[in-house]
Image 1: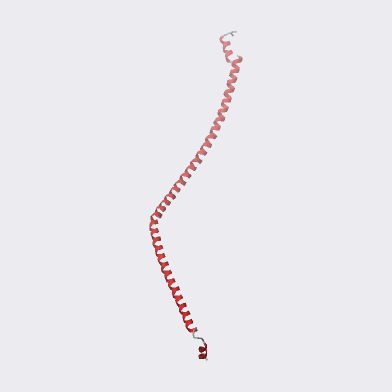
Image 2: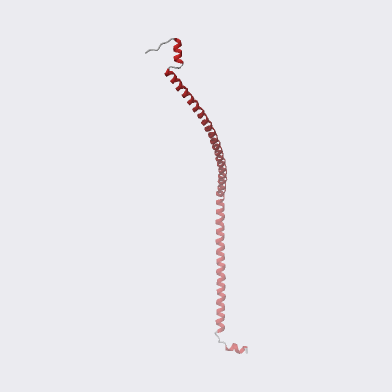
Length: 151
């Protein structure tokens, strides 16, 4: 029965299947060759990229060292500046407190001085009034000396 089935198949089927299998096999070979070629090309590109990266790393190494040194100098400078700023703030605070104390003392001095000036002004006014009226020590002294008034 199997023999009969083979006899009933046309003669062009076998070569067609063989040709199709050969084309499929060639296609797989072409795909594999393209994959191999692409992987070789990618490997070459990666090697070239590796060389460029290594060159950049060598070129950037001194620059990165310099940047690191500058960064450390910057940190030290910021530390010094912050300490200086703190010292200036403390000095300013002490100065303000000293000025506040001095102003309080000066205010007390002005109050005392104002009182003394008021007393002196009152004494001068009283003395002048007494001197103008003639009833003070001047007129008594004049009377004792025997002086007369001139008119």
